[in-house]
Image 1 (cartoon, each protein chain N blue to C red):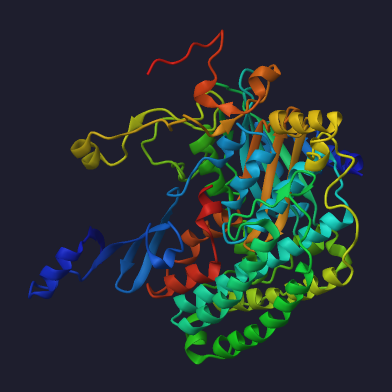
Image 2 (image 1 turned 90 degrees about the vertical axis):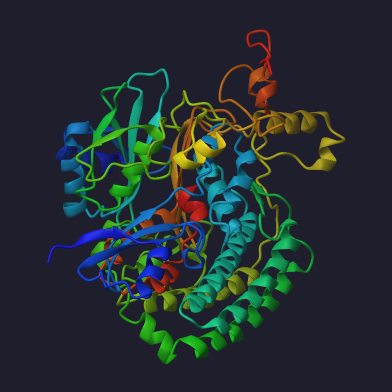
Length: 413
Length: 204
């Protein structure tokens, strides 16, 4: 039978239920989800066509959170852009800060000292734990398991206290500078990080007991939203979503940066690529991150937290600015003209909680990028929706979206 | 290391030229060879993951637009950057890679939306971040940071309220710096205070 599309509103539905003849048969229904809807985790909008309970086609509409970050970047110095990177993947701002600073440093061919690298590793891994804790929590909630969210959110709150101690802000951290970090770690902070690590593992075990063998959770996720290895690669998926499909690609292992090659950790890789595998990936990655953090703190290097020889890039210490003429001029130049970065083109991406966050920078020299392109992993991870959602039940959409763990901040930029 | 890699590529694809790069291998490729080159890269050389598609607007230079592609090999773990110049600077266009990599579909829609590059053979070249009727391409260098006044996307609201999409009020910030020029112009300042001898203070 030929099908036609008919847009219906709530009013229509009301009229139908009051004894109007059933005119729905043979028709498909247009369903709009979002942009403001709890399951879309932000402002994603899906335009779908339903045949009964089955989705026939899905057209994601983006751009509700587009702020023009790339345009803004072209109009300010490198350090001024750091706060904007907080607002890309706003669930892991510390990891974004690090990825951005490293991209610029790669263009300047600047090596940061060991201590700075170790601080940045801690930042990245704590951000990963924070992002995955939220990811697993809300994913459980999407699938109908409210309790998990309570456990993971409590742990995430403890992390935010640690972030606040380190950076002065809980959420928008803006912690890195080009050539270093904003300040050294506070006294006793490493001990408190270790304490947190000790506390988070039992919580993961509890989450494990609540979800991993939970009949309802498994019924809703096993075999749902399966992505084949080939599809995952051609659609440009990265991060846990790619690894769940059985592709062993983790930039920390395969393109080591920040000295990740020194740490002993495993990269979990899935087999089925379904919603259940994506949950397993994140849960295991948190455990691996805890292991990396422990190894990092175990051999935490002494030294400087910024590149001392990069006099045209990293602003000097305040005490020296107030007492020495040379440092005063240096500080003035970096604040007004920006860190001096040579001309060139560079692409750097880091393994962030959501996938590979990349920065492509074109510089003509000086303190302002000529062009800065942000490759948001969520943008690519969402592009597969058009392909994977058709054929699923409407109720599966919530679970599929939750399992992809995307953030619209870096998708729309 | 990068040089020998390039020599290997050059031997197979004699139309390539090497491109300056601060990191990994980068090549210039003519637009008419792009699809064939990328297909060979994907099928024979293992560059199977298209990470990013974007473009650079060189403003007054000719050619004005350069398309940029980043590929990663999931087996060899090597990056490759491909740069393709758009021959026509007024109506820039490039061949679409959406037949080779599915990821190109959205990336090309984004570049079309923000940079105004037309991708020949793209199945569904609509705007993706801005709304469908938006008349400009905001990432072009001649588009002002504050934006340009445009009609509201929702007709009924526009009619009822007479509202428009207005340029951002730049008074007091954000503090912006320009890429070139003497220091008196490049230091960060609020945009609306940038009047000087050459540029008069705007009238309220």
